Amino acid sequence: KVIMINFDDSYKTQVLYAKPILDQYGFKATFFEVCGWVGKPQERQSWQDVAALQNDGMDIESHTMTHAHLNSVSPSKLNYEVGFSKQCLANHGYNASIFGYPDNLGSDNKTVVNVVAKYYSLARTGSDPLMFLHCNGFTKRPQTDCGTLLPDGTLSYVNRYDIRSQSFDHIHNNIALTPTQLFQQFVQRVNSQVPYNKGGTINAFPIITYHNLTYSNEVYNELPSTIMVPLFAQMMNYLH
Image (cartoon, rainbow, N blue to C red; front, side, top):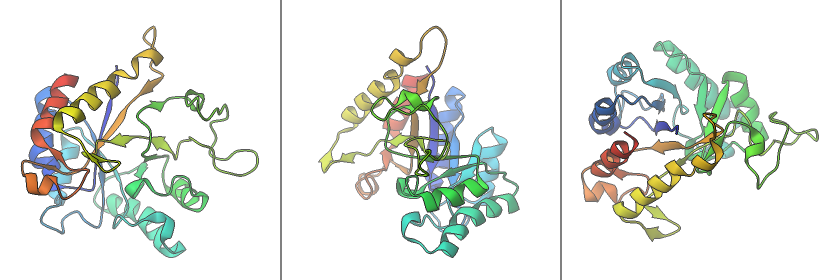
């Protein structure tokens, strides 16, 4: 089995709470940094934090400059969010080749994807529990040509700029889920790859994205994407 662990939005708690748990099991992860947030608000990572993550074998990638919704910005703002975030990271010594769409917006927008493709080799969005290594794995949307554009010039359903991931929100479809229910979802999703991976060949795997971590019920209830630290520890222990 394979799993990829991602973190978005440069939260300080990822360094304070998640990294020691990852270290406990020898796990590595990709941290998608909002370059304009690093070193600014108190709840975000410092550049020293980012350096420490990379020095410990973590992957540092791009998540825009200000976490803007890319479908609703001007062309100059789009280029700033996508292109300058790569340059911003490069200015601090990080060669980002992967882009993460804020709020999973933009991967189905040809204008946005064209700008992302100018600067990055891959881009990650949300919406699917498994990522297939070949585009024909998404049976609900049959696709044999894995190129970014179809013959008619429209965007393909899945391509190198539409890599699928999913986070665990404790409020989903207006239903509040308990930590036990979220853990059960996690176990189910991790094991959902099994039917597709036979004979030592990996064809599909989950990419799981985390955001803020907390011990506080108050902070936990502020954003659906926040996860309690004990639950994150339980998930990583299960993977181990």
